[in-house]
Image 1 (tube, rainbow, N blue to C red):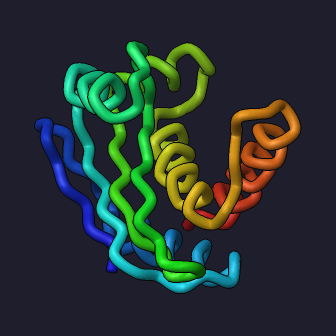
Image 2 (image 1 turned 90 degrees about the vertical axis):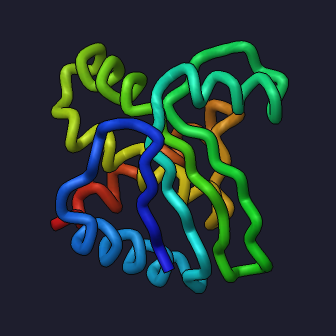
Image 3 (image 1 turned 60 degrees about the vertical axis):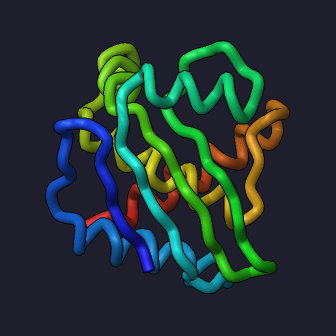
Length: 136
């Protein structure tokens, strides 16, 4: 089950379509959908999580806490709407496209994709682009 939660005034539109897209991505990656919670927040909220849990004193757009059991995906994906807005502006892309990228990025981590090395990051970007093209 995919759920969308908000710690900010921001609210997603088209959550049914997004849930279907995420579910299809999980299925195509030969994984099983468990409980996946998206939490949309602001920079301060996500920064505190980054410091408290990951010992990183930086701003970020997405943090994924993975509780998966083998190929059954479970987790909490926190997304800073402020960071996504700024990144969309910096990369000259539409906000809806950038928010979709970070939404699918979190799930791809659960599917086993990493982004710490240049090669891993390249593969992650390729997968993001592939699934973004499948979005309705």
